Amino acid sequence: QNVLSAGELKVSECAIITPYVAQVRQLRKVWLERCRAADGKGARGAAGWKGKKGTQKSTLGGTEWMATARDLEIASVDNFQGREKELILFSAVRSNKFGNVGFLSDWRRLNVMLTRARRGLIVVGSADTLRHDALWQQWLEWCEEHHVVLDKSIWQDTLWQAIRNATSPEAKRSLKRLMILPFAPAEKEPFARLVQTHLKASSREVSEWWS
Image (cartoon, rainbow, N blue to C red; front, side):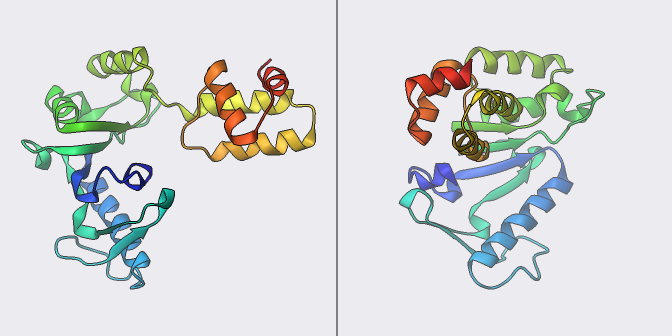
């Protein structure tokens, strides 16, 4: 939604890819229900996909965008081979303490994920699980080197430390509101810029919260 609200891409230029057919069905159902709810038609009869109607309307960021259920392509890796989109969201699905990545270890599936996006690729997955595979480990290392890994747990740890450091109840309440941010940095300088922007924090407050 944040990407679409910028007005550079249309929904039809984006795609969601996942290796599992069951998740394809679930994501299609959720998207169709959302489109129908936004269109005032309710979510009943959401099973199925091709030819279904329903419109998603949003005014995020002051920019209105609309989409029918069919505009957003949601497909399995196998069904998406040979085609491209401007922006691709890839759901890796797998998350377990044993590091079992299943057929995500197939380099051909990884190749489809990496090469089908023209302008942007967003991968949603459990890094702790994916690291157990050598190819995924190499890719994650590249992402970390280029500072494009967003780890919500690290941000939450950083923010809770700042909350503990804050001396006033008002500051603690203000910092807690930042928990909802979809992305936030865990390094000092970006952290300072963020709290100064969102909370109008002074340099003294930043130093107190970060210490």
